[in-house]
Length: 485
Ligand SMILES: O=C1CCCN[C@@H]1CCCn1cnc2cc(F)c(Cl)cc2c1=O
Ligand SMILES: [Mg+2]
Image (cartoon, rainbow, N blue to C red; front, side, top):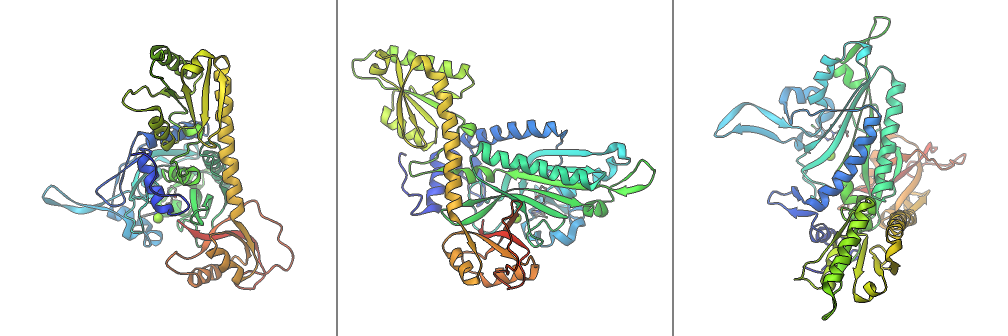
């Protein structure tokens, strides 16, 4: 199937569903909210994992794998904060025809699975820091509109769970991990994000504070949480009795963090860069960075052309560039151009008789469609420069688009107007939870209510006497507000 039926700016939802299928990332599945991740998606996940895993190994994280299942009474251990999540928990109640004695939950997150064993493993300060990471799937039986990568009932993630003797160590790691999440989004996915702190209402209820990287989708005017890094304080240490004997022989509770990013990150990238020809991949996450296509003419030397394509791919691969060729005789060059554009391959190289004769190749950029003829001898350097240029251009363009959506507001009327204009709102407010609840109540509607997305670490100047846009009380901080996924 060639070409898109939907245009990104006309029908974003349909456009998105079409892109993820036509680019061969996703196959829809017969259970709502579940999707098949095909190689074009999994290879991106693996490239991100390769970077992140190497980085957390530098931070001394150790790989673990904990069971998928958790008993009811262990899951209920954090009853205070999970009561809001209870409807999302999926339960196994039978095996074959017979009922299980007690239902078993499928992990929606792994605190309750892991922490009883943290309690067992941590005895002395010498057992600290404990640094545990697992790559796995989790299940949350969500009911709001399922969307490939963005909101699914099963998704892949990494979840890091660490324990320290001091709050200072925990605070430091929270930010180290948040920086890695920023790098995942900005340096790999070319998606601009804002680092900040979640409000008391939006944070992980079981923790002390939550930091996050927040992205924004201009087409829908919705914010989207890219990844989270929580400091749990000693809350879970208390709940699960995770204590250690310090150097002086006194017993203390550990300070813990937990942090995650998920396959949602791939969906954010698709939404950010895709266009009406389909997917547009940032080179650093492109499974194929360069596709080489022979352009044979009726009486041309097709063998020579094919050999030129093969040596081009070989030379690029020798320089660690992910190149491949499409020599399928049953498809025309034109069909192949559209096919690989749909899949978002950053560079296409065309080799025809003229190119052969001139010892050059024609290179076409997916991001801006520009074409350039390059002498074969300069090929590798030129391709590397072009790939770097595309990576840079995608982030720069996305940043400009996101920044163009930011609107600073001071009054309630401007707030509601900006909301309806699909803006990313930056507003000073009094930081009172009641007021945040009130804004939610006053903006409820079929598009969803407005909420705080994060309080950016990078705070604009707060002029003396600035008043909260919602309550009129003295403003304490600037926060990003908007509707969200
Ligand atoms: O975000 C992270 C980073 C990685 C480890 N976990 C935390 C907190 C997860 C919050 N959360 C999120 N969703 C949940 C859904 C549920 F069904 C239940 Cl029972 C609990 C939760 C829940 O605690
Ligand atoms: Mg949720």
